[in-house]
Length: 258
Image (tube, rainbow, N blue to C red):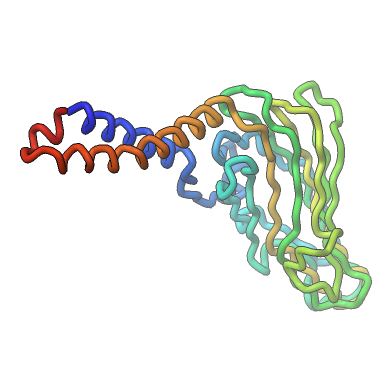
């Protein structure tokens, strides 16, 4: 029975490690619900304290937080975050208007580790989808300021999309920005979305962007990975030894209980 118990123990370790590194199902929640007090979690990152700071519209520009879907990004355990998906009628300038049109939408939120560990070490921002039906001077720009728990500014980031650029265009440096800093457990993010249609009929719509908060591996995760590796090695060695022993005996009992 010792061999059986060891095999079952190894299987348990492998299953536990697999579950620890398997992303949980990600469910979208509207930005309006978050602004109303709800929270969202991506792995061990809690996003809370969502607050609308300002909304300025000119000549038909618009923003509707009820149409923003916010989804946890849990595909990379060391780089979780949130993705913002917006239908074409969620934020932008009209496709038909006379004179300049614009919208500036500003909101903020907090990011913190659920266990309080100071392991958030950098932050990235990427714009991934948009639509233009405009002249060359229209643009969609997202800027954000990253602050620490004391309210001090850590840094700023900015991404911008312009007419003629085809989404997602991942190789364009203007569509991605990152900020590195010493590991912390808490951040406050102030995000500003600005869409400008300076000429007549300059229509521009933002449809998707994401941001991530990469981190140092937690000690428990490192230990679990090490245990998983050792369990794999032990699991691979056991069957051969057990098979040799079983071929030398004739009963199932002696095979299981040497």
